[in-house]
Image (tube, rainbow, N blue to C red; front, side):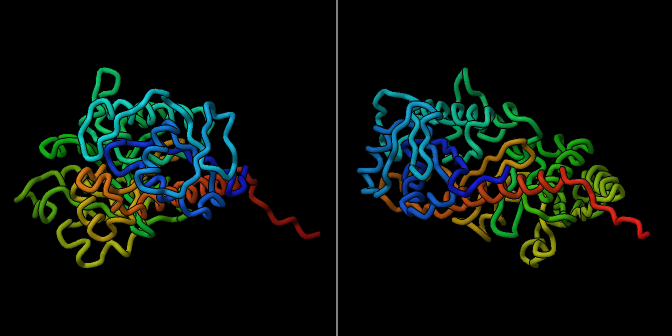
Length: 349
């Protein structure tokens, strides 16, 4: 069912309260036109956010709710996930604040899973202070992969630039051992399906970057590109997917080759994110492709160094909201088209 714009419920996990997350969330919705595009629900506590609002003299008007059945369309709803007072010390790495970040995130994820919100946009967390006996994940994506259906893939998006990852938050010295034919085929299929249903690209072209310098130079600088990547990509291509590569990563972006493709797939985290953030920092979005639900986030972290100063740029968070809404609409349109039977011409008498 296609919803009216303002009826799209955007759940927001508040992230690390000592970082810039709460500031960029409030700044995003100071523009009343945002409430014509969606209805936000912030998973936090209204007293906590009121403190942040007063700190930055935000004009956002908060609507307190104690249950998701109390959401008011066109308001900035704040769901009270906790009731106690939270000590906020901007710029400080605090395990207690990390607990509230995860409480917000896991509660929002359950709401997403249960269909009580339409999409989820996550404010930045600190990957160190969120660790506990109850939460042992390196970040949002890994937890969502466990809780939601599908196979999560980290994809960075800015306009027509889309960079996906074969491996994400693993140590560099483990990347090669993770690259298997099975993984490559699964990830490329996830990218392809996301481009079709989430970005409305009917026949996407995908480029894949090589692991080693110069793609191994025929085995002189490593054999993984020849023995693993090339055979896997050949098999995928032969089945009808327009996948190309592997390409030497060093000149791929500088020569503007990336503009020829609908998505670029990097073999490891920094190989993809360094050029992506160089080209689009401040406007990029982190999207968890491959899942049955939609989650986006800004392309930056907690930024402790400027937290509490009022200097945070909210554009990446706003773009994350826009992208979540766009993908939600694209998926609905894709579902409707997929369910319609093909029309056949009637035989002429």
